[in-house]
Length: 375
Length: 60
Image (tube, rainbow over all chains, first blue to last red):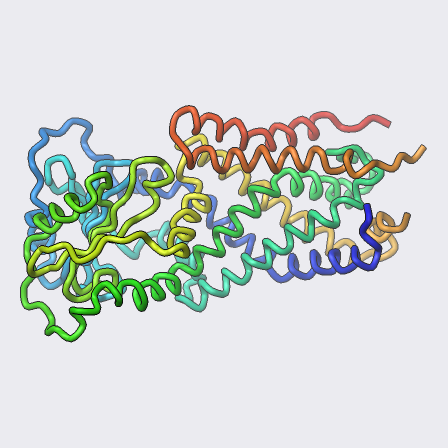
């Protein structure tokens, strides 16, 4: 190795401090993230979600009637979004006290094959919701999210610096050595090295994509202020709509504009994703990668004419691609199980790292790390 | 006798593990079925390596 001891010392100090600062938060993220890997299955078990019926008498679905049904169930509220699930035949209709309200007041599920009402999904309640909020923002809103993003960035730095200091440790040991017969510290040091080095690529990927996900709201705000504002520029001084045209016919316009894509999300006029005078159709492709990428298609909510259809900017594509890579929800149940095991291994690496630091503080004479550096 | 290992000896397995993991992380994004299976196998490889080394302690 051509790393000079001084340079190595830098990486070791970097590894120690980035780890120490982020470890407790990373433990929280790993622990809350574990059940979140299976959030869909758990939601079905808890009765929050239901599997749609297997066999349905298909009939043409009128989205306006789906919206009318949702409004009839909550007459004081307004419909914000319609979202088509990727894996199940489910339209989710999300409502708010007002169309531009950030908080959701209700979520109703409909069958896209028949238009039938399936289920009232509870929002903002239950244990899974608390776990999700802890994981996303420490119950502290956007500042909490950005703080966790900073912790995630420290974690990535800690992994990278950990790889650099791994080399000198292994100069006298065959790969994967775990010394069970020495001191407990030595055993944990070996386990920390083995578990850490073998799962580096996964840990960096999930860590870095997690950091990108914490920037979701700022990135969407940039898109709204630049691209969406540009597309709806000619409408900006018009009075607010008093009535909107048929969403079903607007959907027809969007499908004609992008015949190779399918509708994933419909944002109603008045939501920050559509502006005040348009329906926004976010359309997806059909491969596992392109089904995650969305193309916004804007349709005038009065005339039903196509206003714009353009690609997402690079930063939103990056965000959309980083979502599956963080959630592990893109390769069926086996991938979710692997995600959970790798998460548990990361917990073991974090705990053993903490233990090694603690023991070294207690007993500076047994400083294996310094010994490993001296040739 | 103390043997000092070459960089190649130290880094070959970590490098292979990183490349196999990267393959596993991307393949399920690129397609379904076969691509998913490839992803499962590739991401299971690091776990297998850990399991093997935990069950085969070094002899003195």
